[in-house]
Length: 362
Image (cartoon, rainbow, N blue to C red; front, side):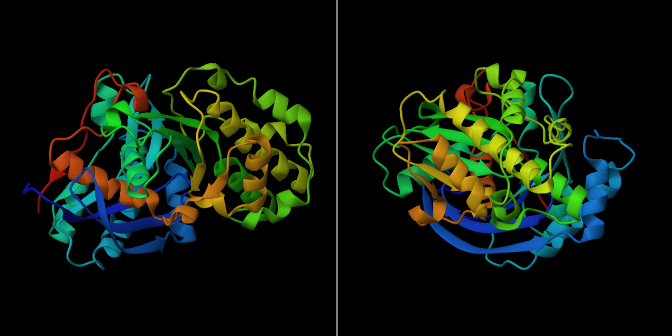
């Protein structure tokens, strides 16, 4: 592609299954030069049901084709609203993730999207990393590094994304190359178990603002049992599937709704606190993105478990916590198109720095 900054449009459909985020970013694949328009397209209840039925399935699974159609149609509808786009970054919907076994599976065909939009689309971001021995996740750390430099940070800091799963990036903005400045890994479950419990017990999508958790008390035995999970003894980089801790709901089966939700919320925060033990150097602040930052009880749990580290939503640094991951895939799309790395040994455990993704042209 031509040199210099271009307008890329990134799209992300996360493990919470709430809908599609889309955001434009002007970037040359190294620096973040300008934030552009953004939008959100929620999945309907019917669409969510189709996607939920396909979770855990691999290509060829009984419900995969229907899920892919939902993902492709929702993205085409949302992304067609934008203008002035040079390149699209399309993540797709993760249905299954098993890097040590069958690999990683994101539903949605970027070729179909390129034809629908009349634009080049970068997609399938994770497969190359997994093929070279990496976890294929998390992929946002290089963008976190670019953001740390954009906001003028002059000391190591961390970004925490609280979606269905939590993930942490430690980054040092004093180092120019992201490959030498990042450590990243999934912390553990975040919103997914809480959302699943709220849906099962109360027919609601989430614990809005952490209101129900605020009425409960965390069960110490549940927390202790949770932290014995083998995942916490692994050295990063490491990654998780959305349902890796699905048995966690059984741990709280006998608790009241409020105590169960508070216990799951405390587990999410405890997993993050355990993750910070792996940081190469202490951080000056922890910036939180994703839906979990809107959960006041979860944020309070984090602050209580991380004394001495300011825990703040990314908005405190002038960033958009709802659109950060969509922006990241705009940024990564430009890196892929220009032959630049999108992951490295300290972010995904891949054997060497690698640029993933395929490019489909209309």
